[in-house]
Image (cartoon, rainbow, N blue to C red):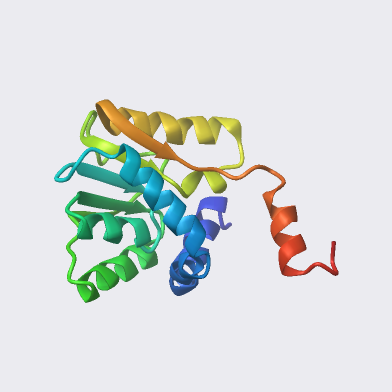
Length: 169
C-alpha cells in the first residue's frame, strides 16, 4: 500500500522541473519571500537549514549570497535536481539530505542560525503532523535564531481552482 508520504515524495521527484518553474512563474511570491528572508536573516556567513526546500530555489539563492545552506527534502529527485541547478549556477550547497520534516533525527539540536519551513506545512494535513514539523524545526534552530514558516489556508485549493479553471467553480 502506498502511503501519503510516498505519494508526496513520488509526485515531487517526478515533477521537480514543474516545481522549479512555479517560482519562476510566480515571481512576486519568490521576491516577497526573499525580501522577508533578507530582512530577518543574520548576515552571512551563517548556517541555514531549508526543510522541504524542494528543487532548491531558495537554498541556491541564499548559498549564492554567502550563506551555508543545507537542503532537506522528502523527494530524492528534488535533491538531485537542486544539486545540479546549484552546480550550473556555480554555487555549492553545504549538503542535501533526504528526510521528512517531522523526523529530523539526522540533525542535532541547536545547529542552525536560521531554519526555513516554507513547503512542508502545505502537505501535513493533521494538526499533530504540523506541530511535529514545527517542533523539529525549532529543535534544530539555535537559541535566538530565525524560523521562517509558510502555510496555506484550507481554502487555498478552491482559490487556485477558481483561478486555473474559472468555469468549474
